[in-house]
Image 1: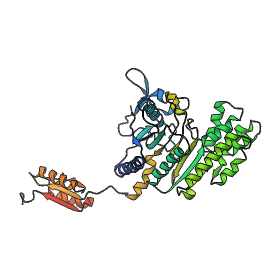
Image 2 (image 1 turned 135 degrees about the horizontal axis):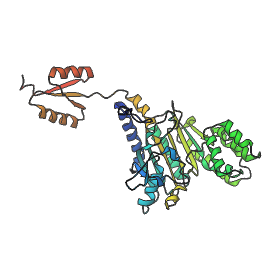
Image 3 (image 1 turned 30 degrees about the vertical axis):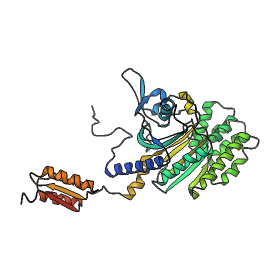
Image 4 (image 1 turned 45 degrees about the horizontal axis):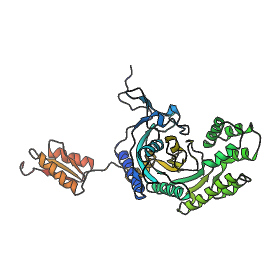
Length: 393
């Protein structure tokens, strides 16, 4: 039988040296942004009961979850998402806390991706959730925090906003089932124009079928709003949603994003719990989003604690290349401390004193000072300190 003791499971990898430093640095920068904006860190379990994610609007396919059972036979999963555990946490542990509640996290999630498609089964996510707050101010706060979080790691990103309600209102005007609506949503999300056309060709032509056909192309700058206006004629709810998104876009433009800010009415996130504004960010050399978020006002009611909420999650691993570019090499110690025989404890006291001064130290494990000096030369360590030299002279 083949043994797998020298490889990692598919969709995972070992993280080494400078990659570890880059991940830690990205996490630090993001946490600083979140903390300075008044968000408090929470940590949820790496395993949760399956019931937490078995919600009607969760839209996390069962086959994507890593599942097991506890010692009582109850179904548990490795955490595939962080919004739902935080919704559970807020509904159970933070019910009496003054609203709004501002939380942030930095934890791994696990998804069993059948085709892999270049994506990891294990990834680190950092993000925030603003719970118990609705309206324009809350939306601007969270999106501004997302922009600041990205800017703390890289300036090379594009930010897109849309509105999940716009698609829902259009789809509600079509004589289709919920399952068919989901099929249409998925083709819009993937911008599969051919499949979308085939689905809509079977429906009676109308202003709303035309609007949905055009959704993947309603992408660009402020001019997109004028193009979308004609689909809102005689529909107050659509007009309200469009005008709200236009107001939000104008407010975000003042953040200095310039041509990096786009509006995309074809942005219909895969998680079906989004009820209003949705947004994504993309970076150079990555086809998938490095940050995703939106408003999910109906999710908390599934935990018997209805309240409005909005949040986002950033993919820490995909933000790491920017930090790697800043320091591409493994850091080299400032000092190598070598102990001559009998001075081993004194060498450790020396290292303690040097590190207290902020100097990066490494302890020599070599038998001779000559071997230590040769090692330092190979590594590029600029200084070798010998302890106990006088006793062994």
